[in-house]
Amino acid sequence: MKDESSVNVLYDLVEYMERERKRLLIATAIVLLLVPLALTLNLSGFFFMTKRILLTDSETSRTFYKVGRSMMPLYFLVTLNALTSIALVFLGIKNLLFLKSWGKKLGKIEKIEKKIYEEVIKDEEITEGD
Amino acid sequence: MNNSYRNSNSIILKILECILKKKSSRGRALKTHIMQYANLKTTMAEKYLNSLENAGYIKRVEDTWGKRTVIYYDITEKGIERYRWFSKIDTELEGI
Image (cartoon, rainbow over all chains, first blue to last red; front, side, top):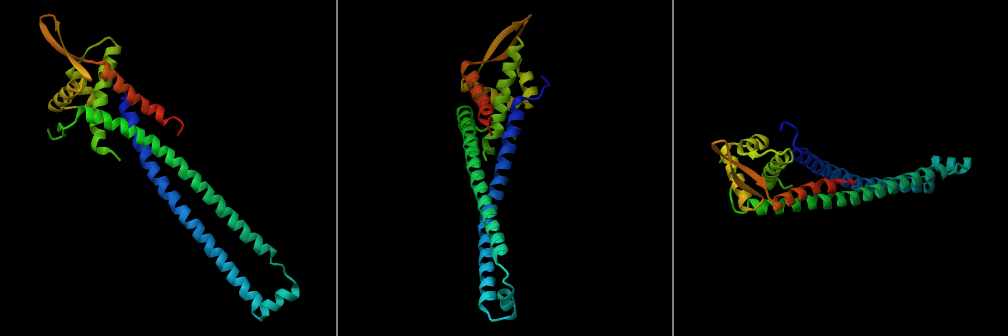
């Protein structure tokens, strides 16, 4: 009778899953909030800067036109930034859906536990102090 | 999440598991075995055993052992079914 109880093992696993689910939910929520925000800031910053460089009659602007330096590499970087952000948001949403199904399974487990508790304990008070 | 009844459930299931294990090894689950397995004090064990008996999960059986009368606990069909529910948790966790 000294072998590890399967009840302990399974409950440890369920509790670990509940903790990890909460952590993953927080991490995913942070990513889903920060990524679009960072992308918006990057894009607005980029367009603001390029507009100023091209429109201002400054030395920099003239150099741009004279040398004929293309803006393509910059646009490429911005596009890459946007694509990376979209990919991150996509992965975040996928993760959220996975966590939702995980939550449903944990909910089913909770229902089983609740049913057993209600059948056995009901209104009886069994506390550690007894 | 549901710690309010998780502790009680853990004890209930350990009691059922103890009786089932004893039964499968053709033994009898005495109160002392259950107390040891579920790590319970006498008063707590009695309360849980009474509750389980009232709920129809287990039944108290009196038998003789030599000249002495021994009381052991047997699991009912309902108890087995509820323990199977618990085993379903394992199935629920599959695929995660």
